[in-house]
Length: 296
Image (cartoon, rainbow, N blue to C red; front, top):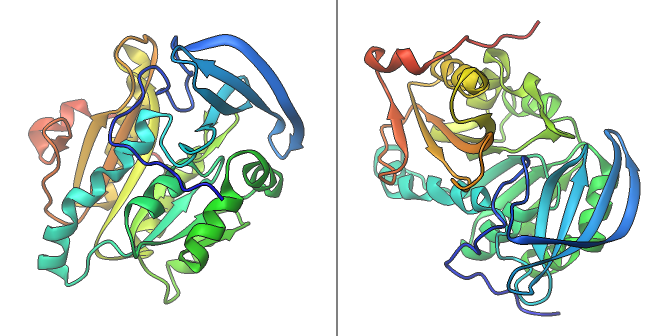
């Protein structure tokens, strides 16, 4: 089994998450497998970036859902927002000082190609992670093509893969005894986010699943200007209905127009993050906010 390489730099051009893969990935691609999933057909493709690095991508609904380098770099993030999720660890010392615990247990909603679990578990010794993926076929693709099997062999019981609906699982954990320090949401059904995980009711379940001072972090795909920024604004407004504080940071490539990846962080804790993470704390900034989302 190859030992993974987790380097510090993001490889340019493979950094758009669910929106698009970017110009640095060449058009030459080979389809490795087509599978029928609960959200339609999924394709695993082999591509190469401009540097000649081989990248496997999971395509569903016409968009790139996950990506992985091949070989020794299998645990290195291919999309920028995977690495951006790790911003939450900047709050760990303050969390420990204020609440008596650090970031030891993490829940991830949406497995896909297990890109962030690979990076997080191999970057943070002692971290334990539960990953919820509701489609067993996607998990099988991850084991065959995206090194989930190697990750499981490497980290052992620090990783639990659970086949379940994310909302149903949150309903159980929020009233039970299992608590997490961080909940990460990266759920998409084809090209669309799972909007029932973005409502006030869903975020209350998230909050109930967190330890005191715990952090919620979500990958939000939205346009960065104009009327199409609505979904980002709505997600921020909704988070502030449930949590005391929220932060937003862009985590995609600025060279691409239209849709963009944003990191939404929310917590009851008073934390400081990197300079590019914008706090949205008070009424003066409510002009940014949109409509609070509720279950219909």
